[in-house]
Structures are given as structure tokens and as C-alpha cells.
Image: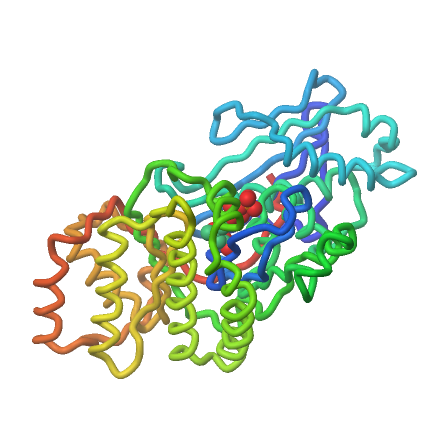
Length: 410
Ligand code: DP6
């Protein structure tokens, strides 16, 4: 069993320095869509996400340093990948912060000069199939940020490390913390951005809103409706939206500030009625921006739309919402639900999609307390008739709120 090393110290392995971390994915409840600056990765609006448990989905990343490496390399799920400009940017920030007197690892001193001469090898693996279509950049790059900060002995807390992760991929900054996390965009008014980029770069960071123990029973069924690579990447899609969507401007000015303030209250009060409504409206708002983008971007497919309608039909036939859906830049649907509804919701979707048990990944099944017969028979029959042939899923991954990135002893 791998154990957490809270101290997060690197170690020696075969003459190389090594450190390893595991990191969660997060799913945005208030969506990040659009940048005001591409180089610093400053978002147009603040966003807020739920961190999902590393027990079910995580990236494990090891960083090695050695003067025997000939260049910097990156291996992702066993395949050699390009050491991107963004990762080089993260390396630059880190190398500028190496302590003057170097580091000491297991009693052996390494000077700053020696550290800076070494090349880096990054090896990252996901415990979920790449083919699941579940984005791994939030987990992979948050893991890398923590590993780099620790192996180079930089004096950075989690907030500082979130800014580093942001440079790898915006949404990654939110995986530094567990629970419910805001990415504070770092400025009040759009007008101040151009003249203050460096300051805003320092202010744009992840902020813990509520940790994972505050509302531990929120669960998530990830309905994998499309396992292929996205046709339009988030990076590219949001750039086109910034260039062409009028609605995105309204979202920045009016919708997001309202949703952000409402969701923080809903989280504080554990108000499921309010929370579920904001989650769904936010998702719809993102996809409205995508439609308003020119040319329009279609991330949802027929299954996505059927699942969204199905959630509304279930919710309309119960005294309180059973689930909330949220959809990122893809067709997969994330269904958020309190634990008491989880088994009912999962069985409903599983039956409608005609999925066999081996297509369901549900590691904490035995511990789940559930309410039964949540929607009456007639309403259920109608829902079954309506959606039976419309939901086409590859698999469902069941998970729940969890903790942030952690160094492990591996
Ligand atoms: C729809 O973080 O992948 O998932 O910053 O360009 O790397 P870059 O984009 P990325 O965008 C994520 C967009 C989203 C919404 C969200 O996670 O908030």
C-alpha cells in the first residue's frame, strides 16, 4: 500500500532524484471558458469545481532529475510525448525559484548549480482508460506542478503551486485542493487587465471554498457517451468563443458573478435544491456560448441531450431534484447526486443504456446508503419508454468528492 508522505520529500533511486504524487480530476460546476491572456493563462471568469476522489480516477506522476539524462522527456501512459511549451514555461518558473543553497536529500547535498544542470524525466499514468474520454489534464498537470515544486526544493505552498499548475492547463489549478474549489481569476474589472498582467498572474489562483469533509455525500456518475478525442479542444474552442461570442461577454459580466455567489451560499448551507439548479444552468450556459460561437461548436451528442432531458423528467417526478447534470467540452455527462439517490440513479441510467455490470466502475458500492422507489411506477414507465433507445453509453464511472493532490511514497 502506498502511503502519503505529508512532508513530501524527494528521494534517491538508482542515482536519480525522484518524487511521486497522485492527483484527482475536477469537474467544473461554474465553468471556465475563455482567457483574457493566453501566455499567463488568465481566465475571463472565475470558476468553481468539485474535486473527485483519487480512489476512482487519478493521475500518478513521478518526476526524476539526473545529470545522466540527455534532455527533458515526458512519458504519458507509456507513450513518449512532446515536452510542450506550457510545460517548459512551468520549468522556467520553478528553475527561477531553486533555493540558493540547493537541497539536501537523504543526507546528501545537491547544489543549486547541480540541480540546474540536471535534466528532468516526467512519467505520468492515469488509472482510468485514456479512451474513456475523461479529461486528464487537470489531474496530470496538477500532479506535475506539485512534483516539480517539491523536487527542486522551492518554498511554495499549495496556493503558489496552483498558479504553477495553471500555467500547464487552467483547470488543473483547481485540483490542488480537495472538496469545492474556486479558481479566482485574479482581477475585478476587465479594463484593468492589459496594464496589470504580472500582478494578475500572481493573483489568479485556486482558493479552497469548502473541503471534502464539509459535504462528503455528493457523488458523481460519469456517463461516458463518447470515448474519442474531442474534435475541438477546450483551448481552441474557448479562443474562438472569445473572438466571436457576444453571449460570452454577458456570461462574464452577469451570469457567472451571479452563479458564483449563489453556488458559494448553496455549498455553505448544503442546499441541494439550489446547488443542483445552478449546476445545470451553468452547464447549459457553457453550451449556449458554444452555440453562439462562430462557427458554432457542438460538444453534445444525442445521448448527452437524452440524459439531460431524462434528469429533468426524473427531477420533475420527485419532491426534490434527484440529480444535476454537467457537461464539459465533450459529450460525456457528469451526474451529480447526493449519496441517498446514487443507486437509484445509477440503476436507472444503466438500464436505459442497456449496460452490463462490467461496464460500471463502482468501487464503494457496498458502503452506500440508499432510498428506494424514488419515482412512482407510472412516471418511471413513461421515462423508460421515452429514453430506452436514446442513451448510448460506453461505461459509467461512479465516484465522489475527494481530496486534492498528494505526494506519495512510491
Ligand atoms: C470546459 O483547462 O482544458 O473543462 O487552460 O487551455 O488548458 P486550458 O483549458 P482547460 O479548459 C477546461 C474547460 C472546461 C471547463 C472547466 O474545467 O472549467
